[in-house]
Length: 286
Ligand SMILES: NC(=O)c1ccc[n+]([C@@H]2O[C@H](COP(=O)([O-])OP(=O)(O)OC[C@H]3O[C@@H](n4cnc5c(N)ncnc54)[C@H](O)[C@@H]3O)[C@@H](O)[C@H]2O)c1
Image 1 (cartoon, rainbow, N blue to C red):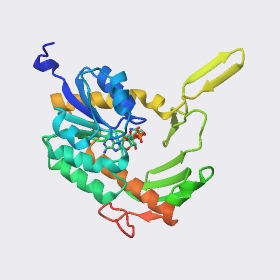
Image 2: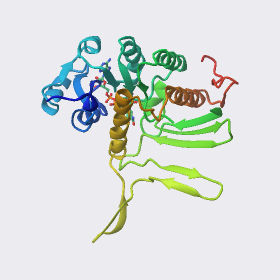
Image 3: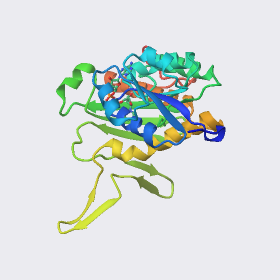
């Protein structure tokens, strides 16, 4: 097939074929007219078999990330690996002149996130997108281990509450739970001066049958966010191919990273965390 410049597709390599990666792989291979998936890479044995069975034969599987970065022929990468590997892979990809899209978060560490954002800014010729990220004054977080006792060993919780106060006075309240076993709920409630909206409480599906009237939630987060996984890739391809602006900037990922690091610190130390004039959380070590 001859592809005219206007129809040019950007060659992509996907890193990580885990829970989210397999969803991304199918979208890249079959649902993105402006993207050609040329390679996938996962260090886990068995992922080559999954790729052979589920992706076009033209998609090459790599089990060695360095080899994939250098030899896949990709112009762009989507990083969907374990969080600790995001920053090194992003930095290596940018050094090799590849456009980078990476799942949130860049890192759980503020200094590392800052280094990545600065590196991306030093390469204005390359697009860098961390989709799905959302200035601030203080945060406080609480958590409890209700079901999975071992999480406490790692300074983690299965249910956590966070309160974020932004510099402009707006307040964001969040609740995260790992113990919701039936269905998935992701509610956003926007409280305004004249009213408020509840967005996507669980689903808009109401079932009326012989059992009565009930609403049904989606089984997991991925079902709920399916459409966003298509939209962000499509936006990234348009940015690379047509130099269109993107809705998420690297700085957004940095801001999100700072909020998360401060919430985690507050939860672990049992103290509120304030932010300094430079917008950095005041913690014992930044
Ligand atoms: N955008 C979203 O809404 C969203 C949703 C869920 C998860 N995430 C993020 O996506 C990432 C992946 O999440 P997941 O649930 O799929 O994780 P997962 O643990 O199921 O999969 C990660 C995969 O990466 C592979 N891997 C690890 N290091 C690698 C490396 N250096 N090179 C190649 N492969 C490597 C692992 O073998 C595994 O198969 C996480 O960082 C997570 O925070 C984003």
